[in-house]
Image 1 (cartoon, rainbow, N blue to C red):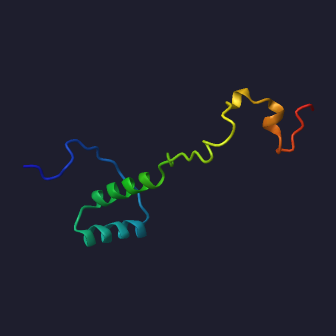
Image 2 (image 1 turned 30 degrees about the horizontal axis):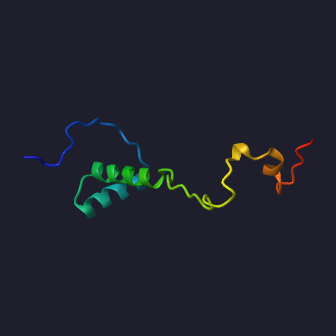
Image 3 (image 1 turned 30 degrees about the vertical axis):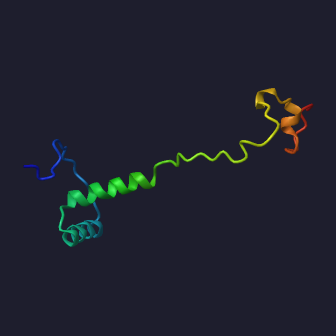
Length: 87
């Protein structure tokens, strides 16, 4: 019978300010779960929130004359950027 506990775990110490420790105890009591479970959930939520966005937008990728950027002369590429390719 599985109780939902991890099959392996590592015990670490977590140092919290008194107010944060009280918040953690209160959250655990409110949810009826362990403080460790609250910390694991918080880490998971933090990780998801800080994962880089992997949605790439190909805006206007189908526009243009079909040439590869490698085939476009440098002068043409720099047009509109205020750069003078001859300097």
